[in-house]
Length: 171
Image (cartoon, rainbow, N blue to C red; front, side, top):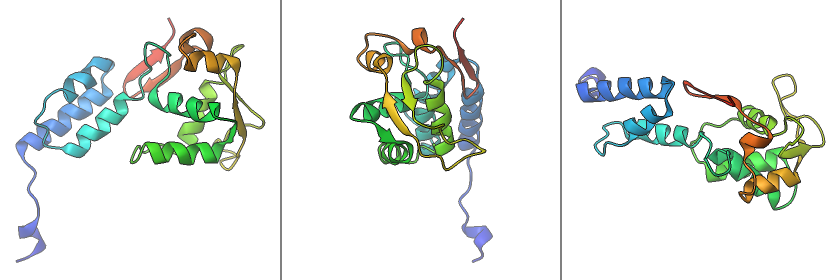
């Protein structure tokens, strides 16, 4: 028997689920991802997990932080830490997330903007031109206020970010 005969066949249901999952991911409405996740009989369990993880990148109403931002600020709150130590800790918590060091740096950089930054660093965060920068990160009093729910990130640093097809921004 050749490899062609032993391959796994893709079903019509799986093609439909992949297509509708991609459509939900690219939708301009966050609710489309939530609607896609709801059914209990998914035929593509890895796609389900990916979209569940993707949903965690939307900010919470209480703090204005997404799950990665909240986790990062919580770890930094324990005491200032170096960027790559923070990245390692986040990767231990969010297995198979697909988050790169440069993506995390871009997320954190957004929290450092404006007159009320949630964190500070002693040198610039890693970026495409300087990908191995390892700054020390510290939480500001504003960052602590957001973590404790006394303030909302949206009111302090705002947001202008894409999560899939959804453009998050202050009006």
